[in-house]
Image (cartoon, rainbow, N blue to C red; front, top):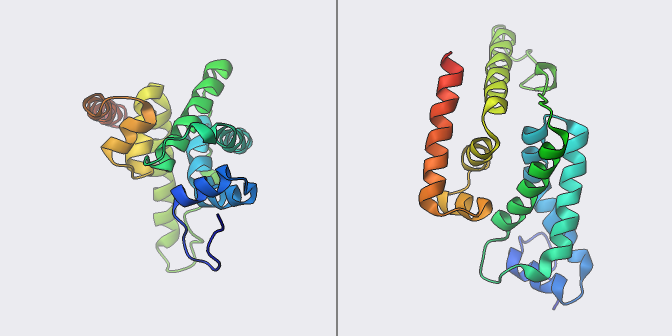
Length: 187
């Protein structure tokens, strides 16, 4: 099977079928498509650029090695995210350390667009820092659910699939995670 030429966005299932038929180069399209989301997940889970880069790479290697297990008709992204979450969980379990991204690592803007923007950017960095610190205080299962739902924009069904939970358990986890996050942010 050959892929269409040009910049047309090829469906994930077509890419996977092409890869499984022997075109290993087609995997780079999936990596390019999802590397940002996987890296962001790892960054939020570990708070470390280096660890996030390593874990993202491990995720894509594992996904490639397990691609024959992917169920046709399912969405690829939640499946890939499940692999990524498992790598992040294992990493955190083995390292048992809390890491946070520093405020200086948050690029909001240059501060040069209008006179008050620099103050706005500082406030946005502080808010981001507070939110990130609060997220890091949440139990891992709540943090995962909130990141998938609100940062990655997955539907409840996709979050449930990625976390291997029933939809009702996923809704409860998101609800409890939000409640705990509010509690942390207001204290």
